[in-house]
Image (cartoon, rainbow, N blue to C red; front, side, top):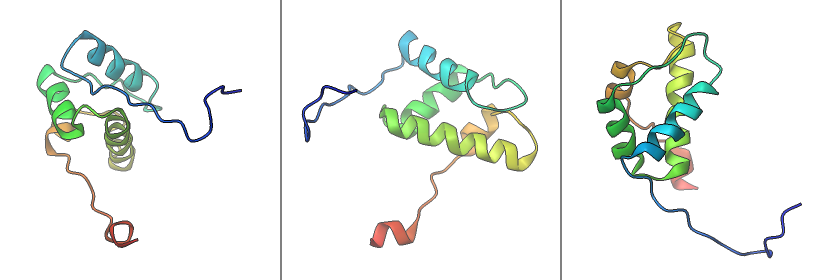
Length: 97
């Protein structure tokens, strides 16, 4: 059970291009249920960090979408090219809500 007071907030620091960020991504990729291993280049890691702005939730969102694309395409792994070409999908209905 969580002992955080109701309504309390805390802020996570943004990720930076360092060993901890690489470890985070390696952990996420290892736990992504794809049939083939995803091995990303340093350039891909920098692009993920840039697009996500270092925000943890955005990093998970991006990797999740890349994994979905990998399954739908039949590749079954996240590639450097997929990261380079990835663009966030804009949900017009959510934006107007």
